Each structure stands twice: as structure tokens, then as C-alpha cells.
Image 1 (cartoon, helix red, strand yellow):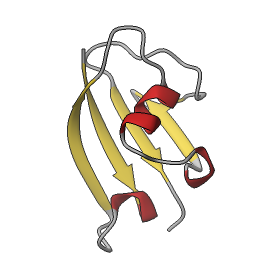
Image 2: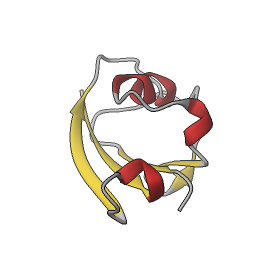
Image 3: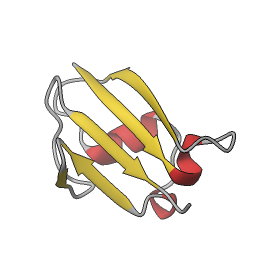
Length: 73
């Protein structure tokens, strides 16, 4: 499945305010799986949103979801 990911704050890297990308994940993947796929530590994520709503790390993703992961500014 494909999800659209926006990384904000320090997670965007290179001093950028945000970075967007499409990510392919297996069906049944969670926010935590996504973070692992992107090599992002749980401690670095201050907020996770799926389609604009707060999400837990255990929340399952669906194809077409828009995920925002925000770190410190």
C-alpha cells in the first residue's frame, strides 16, 4: 500500500520546515512500522497525525492515508 508522509520540524532534515514523500508499506503496517521503515526513532516523534487526526504508534495505516510525523522544531 502507498501512504503520503510529511515530515516536519527536525525530522525533515537539512533545515527544511517539512518534507513530503510517498512510501510503500505492506498491508497491515502501523505508524510504528512506518517510523521504522524511515529509520525514525520513537523518541524523535512528538506528534503523529493520520488524515489530520491524532494517531498512536499502534494505529494501522490504510492505502492513501496522509501521515504527518512531527519532531522538535
